[in-house]
Length: 169
Image (cartoon, rainbow, N blue to C red; front, top):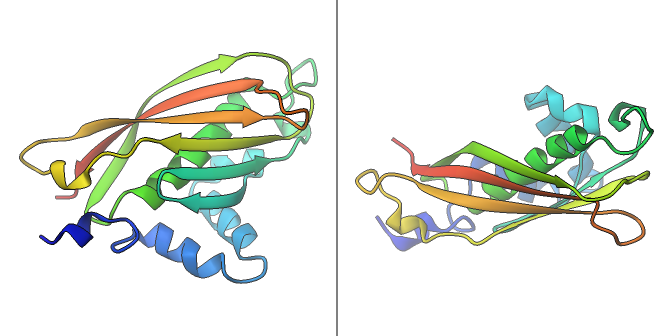
């Protein structure tokens, strides 16, 4: 196999390829976000709006609306976990070459302070050398960190999601 096969830009996943095509068009990011929410309907509960997607990074805007409220009218931490999973998934789809696959393995969440407005979720990860993840070597855990920021610049919620990365069979 050539090294370019292990490069997500040279050998993108079908999802990342679709994003690159749609994001060039007016309203394309919104349509892409809606399409992802149709594929995984639970995401639609937080109305995720993908702002940016590239290897190692994804940014998602999550508006404040009644369905993300908890009993004290602040952003519910489980709704934030849903947004975090959306951001992590977009990062993974942009980061992994089409030779590899990923599965969520675990999530850790810190609810640091109340948030009464919408949030921006920024997902990032230190990416492995995908050429070293082979059928023979097995898989590797990659931790994706998601920092949530409110309109005041505070970080009310912090999430880490571990994903298990393996080579496709």
